[in-house]
Image (tube, rainbow, N blue to C red; front, side, top):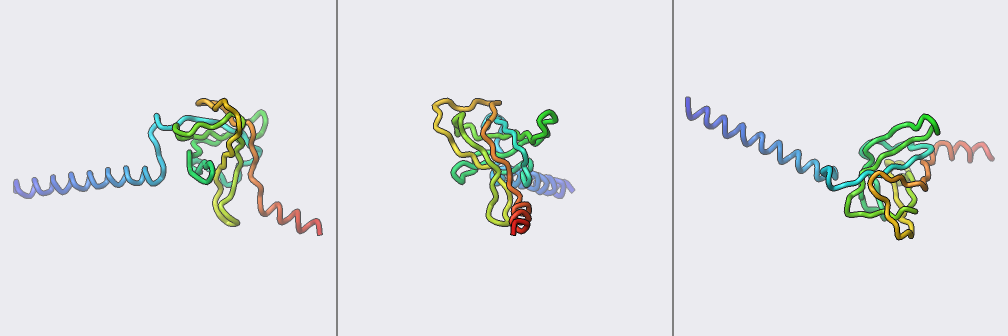
Amino acid sequence: MTGNRAAETVIGALVVATAALFLIYAGQIAGLRGPGQSYPLAATFRSVEGVSVGTDVRLAGIKIGTVTDLGLDTERFEARVTLAIDRSVQIPEDSDIRVSQEGLLGGAFLEITPGASDFMLAAGDEILNTQSSVSLLNLLLRFGLQE
């Protein structure tokens, strides 16, 4: 009986270790970073249609962060977005951010276009130059109604 318990303990430990390694691997693939490896920025949009928590933030097509929170500014009736940006990437203060689409039917992501300022955004700052998402359906309806 003692041999069976030892074998069960070893197998249980292997299962737990395998699960832990899988979670670490999944976190790396998903781009999750620890709290000290990113800094928060904010942006306000008229519409963030298609954007959700976990949406990529890209610069030059490279993922540099993720959306960590979405909320409604009830005074201005706009969407407030909080971003976690990789600490190794500094964003000029006059940069633009817009909601973009991956192709015609692809998902949404936020794209930052860097500005030319020598001053960089610090943790907690807001990107002021924003461009909201454009609804393809609304564009098609407008185009169809004009003819």
